[in-house]
Image (tube, rainbow, N blue to C red; front, side):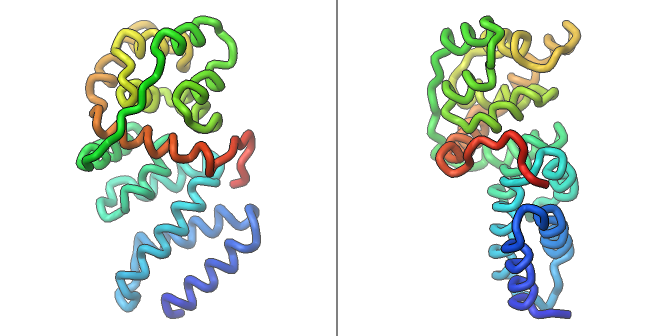
Length: 221
């Protein structure tokens, strides 16, 4: 078996080959992290986790969703990596990630103009662009938030930015995925369960991507 340094060197070479190697590279790193060789020093995990975090941020949504599923229930996974999986994760995993975020302290609460955001949703225009602008998040992140059928991603934005329950409900109806009336009603319980501190911390992660993650209409898998 190659040493940890040899394995890292090999993976970095793959990373240098460009986007076409991204999915294969992510799978190989995931295999390593999920079954960490006993002879590899534990300190090296941080390096491999950071590399996977960077790759996950650049992956196409479907590929990221498949990757996220592999880490569901793995409590040893660092929160920074789990946050990269959040938008593509299944609902139960989203809840677990929010709970992990809620354990932290020092959340900075952003503020969004409720009325302007609601007006943008009612206008039936490009609400993803409006959400990105008001929440100070990348446009691609805003699009993924609005596609989340569980409603948790939009609830994170609203809870983390002090948007009230009634406005969240209106936004979910006007701009979220089409749902039956009873499903829209059920979203209110989703909003209530999203922890405000955890939401604020995750929203801060998304806001931090604005300068480092340009808009991607099609990211390579």
